Image 1 (tube, rainbow, N blue to C red):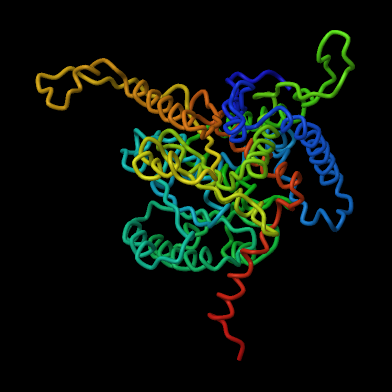
Image 2: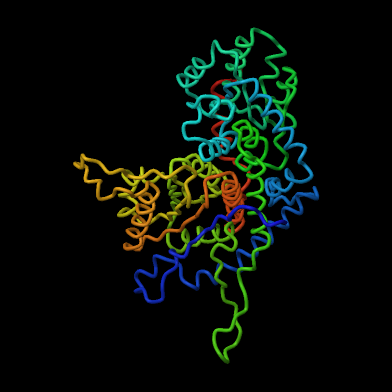
Length: 493
């Protein structure tokens, strides 16, 4: 693989490591060399297992019962779209460009993994007030709205208020089966509205609806009945929460004008790091004349997916950190955190296991959850997600004749400098009380960084599942509420 033309993201958990000089009581709040020595060979076993599972999936051989379902298809999607399946990527881009030329609004219908990744990409990589900008400042791309992800009468009515009476909108409906009730109900209502907007022009209607669905199922059948010219597949072997780098996320991203190739290149770069990073164990001499023994090599940032999975597991079982706080620094990463909440919850919340994820946005949530994180129960692993460089020109505190707010002493300080001071001060306060943190650093908030981060978290989630003996694919618990809801709404006669 060629060297990418963007900087890598890093995962630094050095603050979680207990120093040799610390008192025994405080060493127990962090990780010690014995923990890492225990962890390293197990993570290597997990990496080997995941690569073997990918090979098994690619060859299409029989899957052992203990591995079913094996939705390993997400792993090499970046390389597929950038290589042998480039025509599929081009088709996605062409449809996005056509809709962008014809429409000023696109409604994306989907729930869970069928919309959360797309929303994360929009909030991270687009202007924070994208939908409010005039079309020219949006680069000629359509406004985007998300529905079909809840059962909320007034919210759906509000969206209908927005689009009714206009003829410049379209629907992207995303559902692997088409049987998810929240999305299906919203789709039926919005089809009727779109039909009226199109003046009952059937040709116009079918061009304004783009389904993303499985190779069979209710939505596929409905797309055929409507005669939609563009229908994109959700590949077999790719679960919903792992589907952000399929048309599920790529089509909305392309509609927004994002660089989907750069997104995929970032994800492919993370795959390369996962595959080729040096082994986490090595034979080293402890001292002159000593026998060689297996000790962990420092692997900070060498293999972020494995490091992240292993450290999270250690902090949970050795230090009681059963709550995973993804502490994002900046509003653009909140939806990314919510995407990760679903990924972790549905993948590992099985058989009485699985940490509880929480997303916070700082500095906003330092004024709500911050008190609990500083002085509450010691059951949390806080992982910062920090962006090194803003994308826009730096804002600085101006000098003012009115200094009642006492800000003149900060005149000239930039907003990023203030944010960094908050970041440093918060983590120092946690460390002073031996509440240890880790940090994922993104060079910039852009497609390449997001591609790396999305792929890192998906790989890490699978790795942790294999580490703890939980199948990270499938979501049997979610199906229970669906069965009950349908039984109530469709009682047997």
